[in-house]
Image (tube, rainbow, N blue to C red):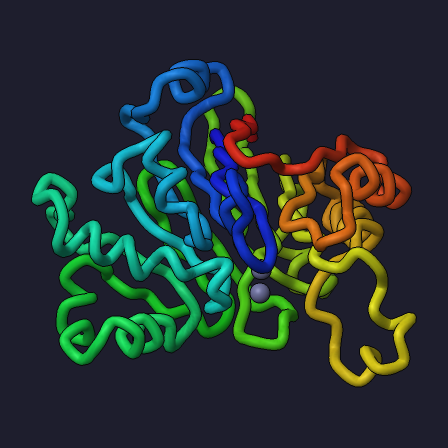
Length: 278
Ligand SMILES: [Zn+2]
Ligand SMILES: [Zn+2]
């Protein structure tokens, strides 16, 4: 598989740094070169994972909206979902070439479509299903698109939120697994979702452990620190940890070295525009 980082910023975009979004495309590592250098994918199954602010623009550097096989949204926070609003405009009202032949499967937390409709206006309740084929997530579930087998489960974030695993069988290398925390505090469910992942993408939305702060102790944790991310990757027996969605105050080298204290595999930090082989 090929993972393309569209953006990682939290909780709002900065110049050249969109919020959370990724493209995951099927294909063996050895055949990735075309995907890295050419804008268009050919014959790959393509899933847009999280549609944070600014990611729709970045997505178009790599593929056309018309090439999407599915969209998967971890949770309803705007830094993971707001570009669905403008994706709807693109698919419904812009260039006719972008209109999908069939509604694009959109997997997201229950109620997501109603929230989009509430923002877009009364007509959108009937119009949204013309472009999005909504599949609500309420617990553990799975779906297959082309070469990619998606499975998800609830994680801990204070709102309904989900982690994702994507498996792709490869003839010579067995099944490859990509897994993603979405936004989540450390939890058993995420360790299961990430089990034996070849690449585990984990947020680090906390610079420091909030349990050290007496006021914060009253609310359950909602994010990982870098140390938490290292522990989650170890518990999941992942091969490789990629940190993302770094809290203000965390630099990439600092986050990576803190996580590496709790995980012996490769640790990297996601950067917008990067292509990572899974
Ligand atoms: Zn969130
Ligand atoms: Zn977030």
